[in-house]
Length: 98
Image (cartoon, rainbow, N blue to C red):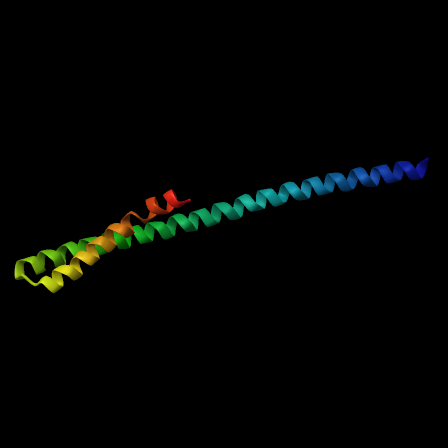
Protein backbone atom coordinates (compact mmCIF):
# COMPACT_ATOMS: atom_id res chain seq x y z
CA UNK A 1 0.00 0.00 0.00
CA UNK A 2 2.83 2.36 0.87
CA UNK A 3 4.49 1.90 -2.53
CA UNK A 4 1.25 2.81 -4.31
CA UNK A 5 0.97 6.04 -2.33
CA UNK A 6 4.54 6.92 -3.13
CA UNK A 7 4.00 6.26 -6.85
CA UNK A 8 0.87 8.44 -6.85
CA UNK A 9 2.73 11.20 -5.01
CA UNK A 10 5.63 11.10 -7.49
CA UNK A 11 3.19 11.10 -10.42
CA UNK A 12 1.30 14.08 -8.99
CA UNK A 13 4.53 15.98 -8.29
CA UNK A 14 5.84 15.35 -11.81
CA UNK A 15 2.53 16.46 -13.30
CA UNK A 16 2.64 19.72 -11.34
CA UNK A 17 6.26 20.34 -12.34
CA UNK A 18 5.51 19.72 -16.02
CA UNK A 19 2.51 22.05 -15.87
CA UNK A 20 4.63 24.80 -14.33
CA UNK A 21 7.38 24.21 -16.91
CA UNK A 22 4.97 24.45 -19.83
CA UNK A 23 3.40 27.66 -18.51
CA UNK A 24 6.88 29.20 -18.14
CA UNK A 25 7.64 28.36 -21.76
CA UNK A 26 4.52 30.13 -22.94
CA UNK A 27 5.46 33.24 -20.92
CA UNK A 28 8.95 33.16 -22.39
CA UNK A 29 7.50 32.90 -25.89
CA UNK A 30 5.40 36.01 -25.29
CA UNK A 31 8.47 37.91 -24.11
CA UNK A 32 10.43 36.95 -27.21
CA UNK A 33 7.49 37.76 -29.49
CA UNK A 34 7.08 41.20 -27.93
CA UNK A 35 10.80 41.93 -28.45
CA UNK A 36 10.61 40.84 -32.09
CA UNK A 37 7.52 42.99 -32.63
CA UNK A 38 9.34 45.98 -31.13
CA UNK A 39 12.28 45.42 -33.48
CA UNK A 40 9.84 45.03 -36.37
CA UNK A 41 8.21 48.38 -35.52
CA UNK A 42 11.61 50.11 -35.30
CA UNK A 43 12.70 48.75 -38.70
CA UNK A 44 9.43 49.83 -40.30
CA UNK A 45 9.85 53.30 -38.77
CA UNK A 46 13.35 53.58 -40.22
CA UNK A 47 12.11 52.49 -43.66
CA UNK A 48 9.28 55.03 -43.52
CA UNK A 49 11.64 57.83 -42.48
CA UNK A 50 14.05 56.94 -45.29
CA UNK A 51 11.09 56.88 -47.70
CA UNK A 52 10.11 60.41 -46.71
CA UNK A 53 13.68 61.58 -47.34
CA UNK A 54 13.85 59.84 -50.74
CA UNK A 55 10.43 61.24 -51.66
CA UNK A 56 11.43 64.80 -50.79
CA UNK A 57 14.74 64.40 -52.63
CA UNK A 58 12.95 63.06 -55.74
CA UNK A 59 10.44 65.94 -55.72
CA UNK A 60 13.26 68.47 -55.39
CA UNK A 61 15.22 66.86 -58.25
CA UNK A 62 12.12 66.70 -60.43
CA UNK A 63 11.48 70.41 -59.89
CA UNK A 64 15.09 71.21 -60.79
CA UNK A 65 14.99 68.98 -63.87
CA UNK A 66 11.66 70.41 -64.96
CA UNK A 67 13.02 73.92 -64.72
CA UNK A 68 16.11 73.03 -66.78
CA UNK A 69 14.09 70.84 -69.17
CA UNK A 70 16.34 67.81 -68.69
CA UNK A 71 14.20 64.78 -69.55
CA UNK A 72 16.73 62.17 -68.44
CA UNK A 73 16.96 63.73 -64.98
CA UNK A 74 13.17 64.05 -64.85
CA UNK A 75 12.86 60.30 -65.44
CA UNK A 76 15.40 59.52 -62.72
CA UNK A 77 13.72 61.84 -60.26
CA UNK A 78 10.30 60.30 -60.96
CA UNK A 79 11.83 56.91 -60.12
CA UNK A 80 12.96 58.36 -56.80
CA UNK A 81 9.51 59.77 -56.13
CA UNK A 82 7.87 56.39 -56.78
CA UNK A 83 10.50 54.63 -54.64
CA UNK A 84 9.84 57.08 -51.81
CA UNK A 85 6.09 56.50 -52.03
CA UNK A 86 6.60 52.73 -51.87
CA UNK A 87 8.92 53.08 -48.86
CA UNK A 88 6.44 55.33 -47.05
CA UNK A 89 3.62 52.88 -47.77
CA UNK A 90 5.73 49.78 -46.89
CA UNK A 91 4.21 49.23 -43.41
CA UNK A 92 0.71 49.30 -44.85
CA UNK A 93 1.70 46.98 -47.71
CA UNK A 94 3.32 44.51 -45.30
CA UNK A 95 0.25 44.53 -43.02
CA UNK A 96 -1.98 43.81 -46.02
CA UNK A 97 0.21 40.85 -46.99
CA UNK A 98 0.09 39.30 -43.49
